[in-house]
Image 1 (cartoon, rainbow, N blue to C red):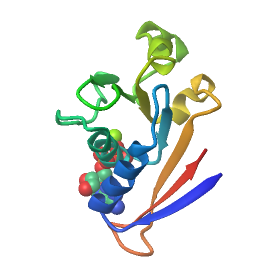
Image 2 (image 1 turned 30 degrees about the horizontal axis):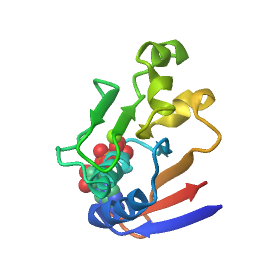
Image 3 (image 1 turned 135 degrees about the horizontal axis):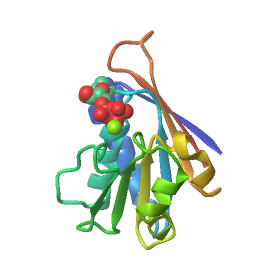
Length: 142
Ligand code: ADP
Ligand code: MG
């Protein structure tokens, strides 16, 4: 199934993510792909808000993983941009999280494609410059 959203700014992107968060279950995996600045982290903030996460959510680019436990479900927020290969993911215990109790959200998941489970919800975000600098097109596949 494929769902397409047009968003006209970061606030709308966050609202969409908040709605998606309502349907997530223990063990859900969501992947985020799209260029630098597409809005993956903005989406992540919205998803965290929708799960009821109280902490400030920012990009885990330098740490690869940030864990938030204050919401309805634990949130494992990955940014794998700096990951060189699958071994590094196993080193940080990727699988334990992916098949754990929380929701895994993975920015730049395309870089570790082989490690992504079949049942993941795939989200691709693209700038939509024809419409304007704040527009994005999000394609959700599940
Ligand atoms: P990424 O994580 O994909 O590299 P970020 O989420 O960190 O990107 O940054 C997206 C940037 O684009 C932010 O500065 C945000 O304010 C801006 N932006 C503009 N329009 C949108 C939109 N419709 N959705 C999400 N972000 C947007
Ligand atoms: Mg990001």
